[in-house]
View 1 (cartoon, rainbow, N blue to C red):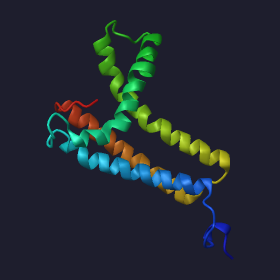
View 2 (cartoon, helix red, strand yellow; view 1 turned 180 degrees about the vertical axis):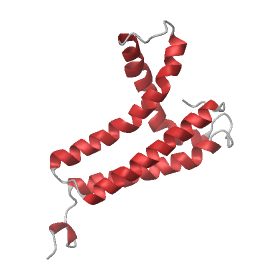
View 3 (cartoon, rainbow, N blue to C red; view 1 turned 45 degrees about the vertical axis):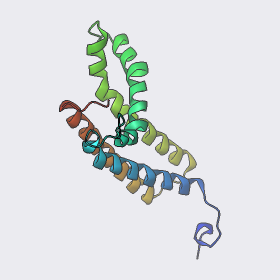
Length: 149
């Protein structure tokens, strides 16, 4: 017996869109992992084209760093009293949040719609592993002098 989504011409369902989003996110992170080491190698004039690929995640992480994590550091009494040390401390936490927030949002939507299937869990795991690898690539290369973030 076929379900409605198996039949030709069936309309796409929201969980199909989420699966597509998970696949797209994993592809983005894979591309980010592969290109990040070469960001500083290829320049067109004053522009590093491969850096543009990093912009979506790093701009969100940058906003989280200054608007969420740094104020939280101050409220928790962990501030060192100066902008620069707090900015450096907040970086990894903001980057982790930049990965976790979208994944948590997708998981909440899947749980709320009661459409969570094994394929979604597999792709969530793929994206989570890619995010962990990407996080370590960004941290490793940032510690070696490449600072986009």
